[in-house]
Image (tube, rainbow, N blue to C red; front, side, top):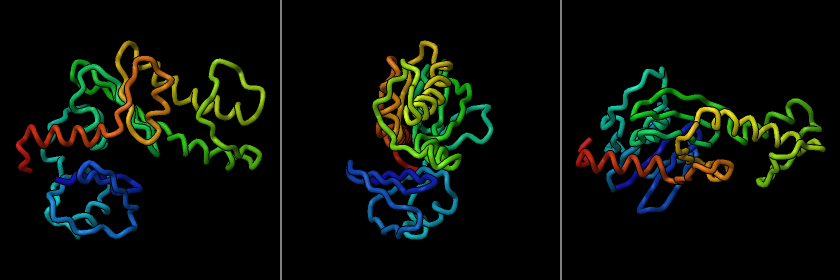
Length: 208
């Protein structure tokens, strides 16, 4: 069984426990194994189905209720099995979803770290900088590169802390591990989407 998470920039496959990514303009091979996928990109979905018409959309297995209009299927899957948690998917965008007593209470979206990094040089070439993973957020900066990174990280961290209260925070996505270090009540799950897809398939005896 192959799992596939189709995003806005890549096809992300989990094949025999190993990760494989293809950019949207790359050729997608034909697979013999069963494929279950989740997608936020209609055109990319068509591309996958063209080479693998047997691929099955896991959305058919879901029953996720929310009053949030336009919630992405990836966010729904990441939140699907949570009762009282904050789910943060830190990729090209950072999505934050609040689950309370098994109900999806809503959430919000912020630019991802790389989006922040690209924004500053557009304001001024003097604001171009090399991102550092170790940033002191307890001290007011005294140089420009530190000032940028301080503001950037605070802009991401503070809204999450404001809604987290005493809830556990689950981080996933490419920058999830980095962000999780700023929160005591947090865990990082690299394969949260794939883990939840597998749980859904198992719960439905895998016939979509």
